[in-house]
Length: 604
Image (cartoon, rainbow, N blue to C red):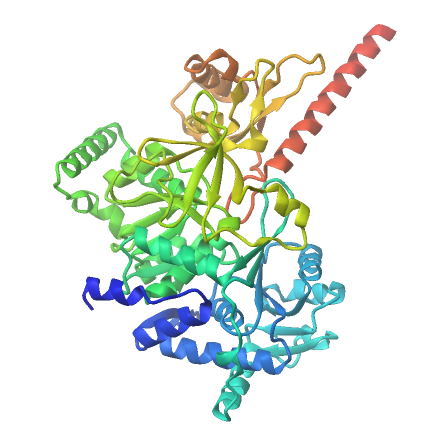
C-alpha cells in the first residue's frame, strides 16, 4: 500500500473504539495484529493473530459480557501485558461498558479499595496474580464475576470464591455461538463518544490517587494527533514494555498500533527486554527515560572500556553527527553493532513519563536512534506535546500536537508559568470528585500543575512541578527538577530528590538533596582508596563544583546519602511524597538526638 493511500485511509472518522476496531479489521483483515509467544520446555512457539480474528474474538467476548448482564457497567482489567489484556480492554470499550485498568503491583487491599470506589461489577484478571485475587474477592462489595485470562483448573483455589468464575476462553466460545444465532447487541449498543468509557486511577507521585474519566473521543482524538506527528505505518512493529494500565503505554503504544494496522508484541518483563527485542525486532518502542539512559550507559561503558576505545568512540560520535547535519546519514552503518543489538530495525524511540537527559538524547541521535520526547498527563489522554522531525530540541518536549492548545498562566520575569491545556483530549473530570475537578479547570482550561516556558517556535520546556517548587524569602523560585538534573551528571549518584528544609528560625529554606550513592561506580573509579571510603566528601566535593555554576540562591546546602533506591511508580517515577516523608523523619530524628545530647550535656 502506498504511503499516501495509507494516510488517506487512516483519516476515516474514529471517535469511538468500535469504529477503531471495525476500520482496522476492514482495512487490514489479514495483517498480523498481535504476535503471541507461548513458552515451552522444548522452545517457545509463536502465534500470529490477524485483525479479523482479533475483531471476531473481541465481539464474541463482548457479547458474552452483555449476556451476563454487564452492559453499561464498569469492568476492571488487571494483569501483565498480554493479548488477553488488550482483548479485554477493547471488548469492554467497543460495545459493553466502561473499562477500569488497574495496576497489578498494588496490594490486594488497594485493588479492592479501587474496585469499590469505581463500583466495578466484574474483574478480568491474570492467573499470575491469583493469590491477590482470592483476597480481593473477600473485600470487594460490588464485583459479581471474576473472569480469568487463563484456563481455570479444577483444583484452582479460585474455584471456591463466592462470586461467579469464568475464563475468557469459555466466554468467547459462548459469545461466538450467541452471535451465530443472531445476537448482535454488542454491535448495535449505543456508544456516545462523549460519555465515560475509560476510568483510570492515577499512580500519583504525590500519594493521592484520583479516578480520571476519559471518553472515547478524548482517546481517539489523541491517537489521531499522535499519528499526524510521527510517520508510523502498517509495516511497523511495536513492542509493549511499559505497563498497559498506564494511559501512556495504552494509548500511544497499543491503541496507536491498532489504528495503524501494525503489529503489537509483548515484553515478558524488564529482565527480558534485550531478549524480546531480538526476538521481535521492533521498529518503534515507547520507553521511559530511565530505560533509555540504562541502554545508553551500557553502550558507553562497553565502548569506552579502554582509553583508546574511548577516544575512538568520541571521534565516531562527532563524525556521525557532523555528517548527519550535512545531510549524509551513515549513523546506522557507523554504529551497526549497537543497532544490531537492538534488533536492527528501530526507527523510533519515544520517550515519555519523565524528562530525558538532553545529552543522552543528543548522543543517541548521533548514534542513529531517532528519539522523540513528548509530554502528557493521564488527564489529557495523555499526549499534549511531542517533538517533530523538524525543529527538534533535546531539552524540549516539542510543540503542542495538532488540535491542542497550550498556554502559560501568569508567566514570571523568566517567562515561566503554569502550563494550561485545551483540546478534545482533555478529560471529563475526576470520578465522583467535583471539588478536585473544579480545582484543575480555570475558564475552560485544564491546569496541569506543571511549570514551563514556551519559545518563539511554540516548543514547550518543562521546568518543574508547581507543588515541588521551593520559594525563598525574597520570592525566588528554586526548581528541584533542575537541581536533580545537575546531580544526575555526578558519576557517583544514581538518583536524587531535592527538597527545601524549612528552618525553625524562619530563614530561607535549606536547599537539601537526598541522593542514592552508586557504590559500584565509586568502587571502579580511578581515585585514591581513602576517597572511596569517604563517600560523603567524595560526593559533596562534586556538588560544590556544581554549586559554582549556579546563582547563590539555587546552591545546594546539604546532602543526605542513602544506599537503597527510592520507591517508584510502575512508570519508574520516584514517589516524592514517600521520599520527602523519609527525609522529614530523618530530620526530626536528628533534631531529637541533638536535643537529647544537649540536654545530657546541660545535666552534666
